[in-house]
Length: 325
Ligand SMILES: Cc1cc2nc3c(=O)[nH]c(=O)nc-3n(C[C@H](O)[C@H](O)[C@H](O)COP(=O)(O)O)c2cc1C
Image (cartoon, rainbow, N blue to C red; front, side):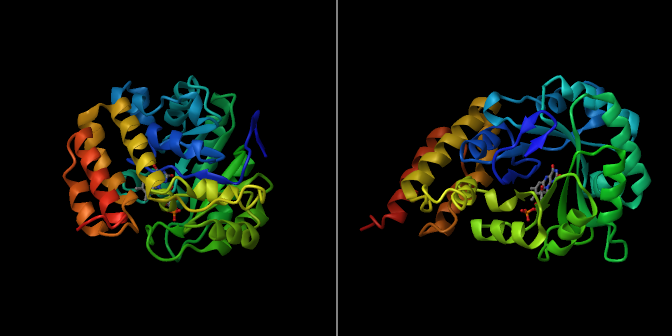
């Protein structure tokens, strides 16, 4: 599949997740076969006001390409100006966040609140597309709430304005992240537009991915929470297409090796202090399914240093391999 000049090889995309899909995690998932990834959402206003922390979110290494930078905001000109800054990092695309439900984003007219005004969505795409010479894409939800399901209308408005790809999360803003995602709305958007559509919501296995591709006709699937502590999900999905290379789920050694690699990178990019604080949630996700996980998770919550993580790794191996007396 082509997006502008970028070739996207594969079917599974890593979803943008603020506070989770930073450079360390994106590199890991791309290494395990994600076809494409998207940055954590970046404040358009923060970027144009030269906020240092915001600007740090833009860094892209070659190991994470093809990657889009996602912006949030609501003023077309501000988003366009921010897109020009973001485009200097040579991302594959600029993605506009039209789905975030968080009160501090949606309450400020941005994210999912944009879906209340399809004409504004169109104006944003048009203005940003004029400002940069790379593709502009959008990530939308099913709608704002059950009485305003308008993903098809918003997708059409964005396509007419120049959006080159549309990701659809099959939940309304009102539903946040809880009930099962509605894949029919993904199929409805796919039928309504001619640009590629990414289906998103509730992909936790290769089987889910295959089912979504088949049921909705979407071009790519986007994996969010299914990748937490589980970057292997991309390898698993890809193996469905490459019968020569069947893969088995990661064993405890692979799990622990990759967890360590992930957290070491996190510390390398953010420093040990911040890195280890963020490592608490990631390591807890890596413990899922391991014998004695509840006890191990308590250790995860107390991590302070890389050497604490070595101790956690040792205890996880002892527990998983049942080496206790
Ligand atoms: C912790 C977290 C952070 C998220 N941050 C973003 C974000 O920055 N931008 C965005 O478009 N969506 C964001 N999302 C939504 C996901 O990209 C995705 O649409 C949602 O989780 C549904 O997919 P899933 O069922 O595979 O998790 C976030 C979701 C989670 C759980």
